Amino acid sequence: MEYKHIVVAVDGSEASEKAFKKSLDIVKRNNARLILAHVVDSRTFATAEAYDRTLAERAEEYAKDLLDNYVEHAKAEGIKNLVRCVEYGSPKVKIAKEIAQDFEADLIICGATGMSAVERFLIGSVSESITRYANCDVLVIR
Image (cartoon, rainbow, N blue to C red):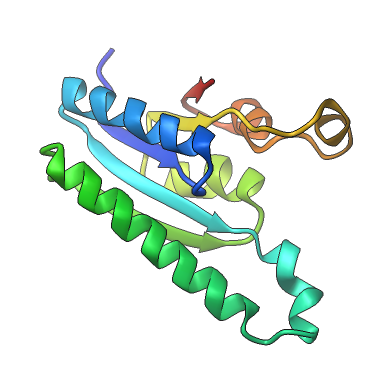
């Protein structure tokens, strides 16, 4: 099977950095389109924004800088067919159910999280949710 549309979920963590690097090899090998996806988890700052109005602006600026950096790196590796995608909401829902469908992804690559066992038990990890709800293949990078 050859992958044509590969979504890589990035958030700036070490795990997502590893996922991004792995995605470059897979994109090259399959001559696929790379979709760099970052979801601003608006739930985390929704209540805090009442105290600090610049939080949303900073999150948006962070997302732009993050994706600019990944795009620059991908282009330096010779990848020309790429798209950047910034969404707002829950990463668990957006990546697997919306972004992957919008871009007709046949593979989603994400990093394993660094959450503790207690956090995973209570809220579940993003990578766990993606593997559960995606309609395409998912590669979780350790």
